[in-house]
Every structure is written in structure tokens, then in C-alpha cells.
Amino acid sequence: MRVLVTGASGLLGGGVARLLVRQGHDVSTFQRRPALVDGATDHPGSLTDDDAVRRAVTGADGVIHLAAKVSFTGKAADFDAVNVDGTRRLLRAARRAGVRDLVFVSSPSVANSGSAIAGLGAEPADPARAHGDYSRTKAEAELLALAADSPDFRVAAVRPHIVWGPGDTQLVERVLDRARRRRLPLLDDGAALIDTTYVDNAASAIVAALHRMEHIHGRALVVSNGEPRPVGELLAGICAAGGVPAPSWSVPGGLARAAGSLIEGLWTRAGRAGEPPMTRFLAEQLSTAHWFDQRETRRLLDWAPAVSLDEGLARLAAHYRAR
Image (cartoon, helix red, strand yellow):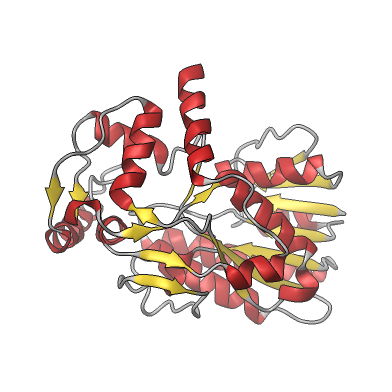
């Protein structure tokens, strides 16, 4: 199969592209900077460029769409341009190019208004209730993608939950950096039960979705390791793997959420680069339960995670020892 992977310069996108190459597919990648995936053909470009998107999808049988603007802060228009308009542009070009199947890689945050999630499946995406511009625009993009599903252009959404692994700069490096500087508190003593997804498991689930499109098109599925643990235990495991002290001081979750809203607003208005030390979304993720029932996902994808949470942490520790 000829497969285009967008966003392959990222941790998860690169893992997806490499897995497809190992399976023998003809793989091309599309993103702003080279993905450098051995065995794949790079098509550098932006989702905001009609011509670049059209060239990238030409000849593809399937598309896995991971490219997105991912940040806790930033201008709303920038999120809209990439996550919503870029997805719309890709869908239109793929359909016109005769692409058969498209997997939209989404996020569980598209259906999370900040309250606890315990054992639910993939609730409907809801831009109006999503917190933050990233979640809002991913929700809008998922709705666009699923609305495009048809018998001759099959579309499904996969929502991997908190993906991490060696080389991860979105979660692991931020945790280690803040813990090293003693700026990583536990919220409500780190008691909230959460699930995460080791990167190899997320990649294999996404590729499985492409192969199982007959069974899942038109739907959204949440993917995780299926091993919920207290957030304090997970943070301690990441810190141990990276060789830094685990967080040991606690802040009330409600206070952190209020402070996160204030800091995020001030940070954005000041036009500061990088990520603020706390946002409301981050505080919600660290202080509320969020884990999902994986039975339907595993049945429909005919898939199960191959790397346990403990094995993933061992691999992460080996990665930092090698460095």
C-alpha cells in the first residue's frame, strides 16, 4: 500500500512511518521539516499550502494524518490555520486524489471538559466544551474528518492518550526539566488515576486502524496502555528513568487550576515564547482521573499493546543511561 504520513518528524509520527516501512509499505511523509525516516520519501511542506498538500497526497492509497499545532499556548488563529483549515485542505485533496482510507490522529481532550473520566469510551468530540485552543481545534478537525467518511473514502479517528517514550520532548523532557529545577509539584498529592500510552503501542494501534478500516470507519476510538496508575507514581517512574528526584511537594488541584488560568492568560498577552510553567489544561491533567475502557478499541482493531508500562519505563531508563 502507498501510505502518506503527515507529521512524521514528531515522536509518534516517526514511529508510525517506521512501522509502515517495516511492514513493507511504500511510505511518504509530509511535514515542515525533514522526517528522516529510513525507507520513506520526504515531501516537505505545510498544511497551509494547497499545492504542497495536493502534491503530497497524489498517488497515495491511504493517509495517516498526525501533523498539528500542539501547544498549551499560542494565538487561536494559528491553531485554526493548521489544525482545522489544514485538515479540511488535506481531506479535500485526498478525496480528489482518490485516496481510499484516512486515519485522523486525534486526542481524548476533544471530549474532555476538565472533569474526571473513569472507564469511559470515546465520547463525541465537542469543540464548545473543550479546554484550550489545541483541544478545541482538534475537536473541530475530528468532526470534519468523520463527516467526510463515505463508502469510497473511509475515515476513522484514533485518539492516543498521553503518548510518551524515549526521545519524547512533549512530556518526558518537560517532566524531567521541571523536576530537576524543583518546579514540578504533585497536585492533590498525585492521587489522580490516569492512563498513558507507550509510543510503540500508539504507533501500532494507528497502523492497525489503517488495516481495519472496514470495521472502524466513521468512528472514533481512544487508545491507551490500559494500565491506569496514580499520576504521582507515573511521574516518579519517569523521574527515576531520567535520573532526577521525583516531585515531593503538593499543591491543591483547585488552586493549581486557578493559577494555571491566570498564568496562561498573562503569558499569552505578554507574547512570551515557549510554554508557561502552568496552564489550566495541564493542571486538569495532573489533578483529575482520566482513564478509558479499552475493550471495544482492542476488539475493533484486533490489537493489544505489546509494551507494558513497566517495560516502557525500563526502555526509557536505558535510553537515558545510553545518553
